[in-house]
Amino acid sequence: MDYMKETKEISAEEAIILWQASRLSLSKSYEKAPEILKVHDSVIGTLGNFSASIGKAKSKKTFNVSAIVAAALKNGTVLRYVAELPEDKRKVLYVDTEQSPYHCLKVMTRILRMTGLPDDRDNENLEFLALRKYTPEQRIRIVEQAIYNTPEIGLVIIDGIRDMVYDINSPSESTRIISKLMQWTDDRQIHIHTILHQNKGDENARGHIGTELNNKAETVLQVEKDKGNGDISHVSAIHIRAMDFEPFAFRINDKALPELIEGYKPETKKPGRPEEEKFDPYRHITEQQHRIALEAVFGLKEEYGYKELEDALIKTYMSVGVKLNHKKAVSLITMLRNKRMIVQETGRKYTFMPDFHY
Image 1: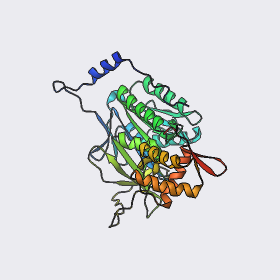
Image 2: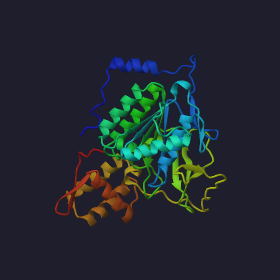
Image 3: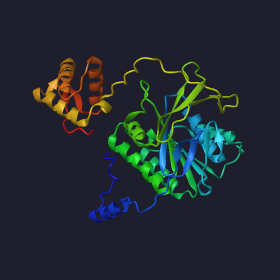
Image 4: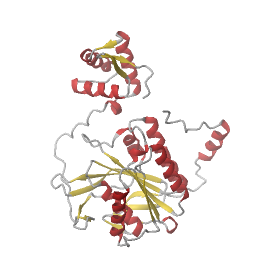
């Protein structure tokens, strides 16, 4: 499937018009993006931009985002989140891609309870979409129509951005959905906040889409369980364009609502060298390095058994500046197989697919 098929070529004339329209000039004034979401005095969300929350499973990411939505509906403070939406942008669109309508309704009810608004009837400023049953392509289309056809929209939550793509490791798909976020926020002058799972083994947002989010979002919040008490979740900024904020923590109270823990102090980092970032052959090696090394390996021989392939990869990747040990080579072979850059089709022998799509 060609995920980029929707991308239209523009004519030279159209490109010239866009080029001229994109020029900055010191003779013009440009408005600063209105600040709509803060933690204390630190800006985490502005109109025309997008942000993200990341966290491992069961870290209470959705509870945390519920607090952001509740603050927006109140146009006030919930937990440490302070919302200041303009009067003509008070509507919130919440998109859930993972949960059943039953569970989505529980989230919707929780948000209304956190604001003190009635939870037995719909609120005119909150629209909630349950999109679990649709394909990624359908979800993108539905969300796009909702964003462009909802008057007075100011904030959009996408709980489960990974479900807007088929393959979280596809650069083309990741670029496409991040470009959509940038287009939607700019065209409609809204703020979009997305939620993405973290890898189990490290602190990185999952997949190529996680890398793109980290690169393009104005703020990335991390929600994680307290190491000493699993009932407590704490929130910090791992990337923020504005001034950083002091991390804060919450627990779920007996009414099943998140409740701020006053005076929370996060565990201080242990002295000594920081832990080495986990090796990721997808992120830490470029496509060109892969291609040069693989062409060298399979230029010598057309097919390899596992052990001789591992030895050959360690040697040739060293020549392109990548030092591998046994553990890293195993991780590399897994990634190469997953991306079908190498295949194992004739018995147990591995062969090269030179026309691989990276």
